[in-house]
Length: 127
Image 1 (tube, rainbow, N blue to C red):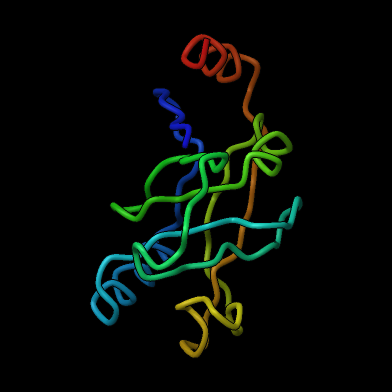
Image 2: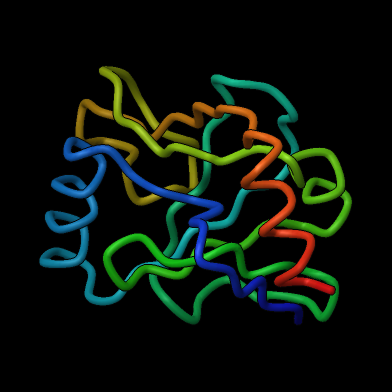
């Protein structure tokens, strides 16, 4: 498993997402995220009880959302490498196996491209 360490956050969450993460944590204990598939804004990251999803050696830990680790497959990461992921919440139902399912809200992926300066810093950080 690779860990991306940089001063710039590769994944961040809106206040609404942090609130839902807090609720899910109260209900289910520690949680984690995995972004599988979906290479565009609007895809849904999956939220699981921590430890219940088998992370593989090729998965990348992008960061943490209020202590909840956020992983992504390496193929996905190659696509998103120059992008900051912003996890938000919208009305609707989450994925069938995702903890947000049944809350009336679902996690949603938004993104923004890193600036040239941010990319330069990230390049230095990852060598």
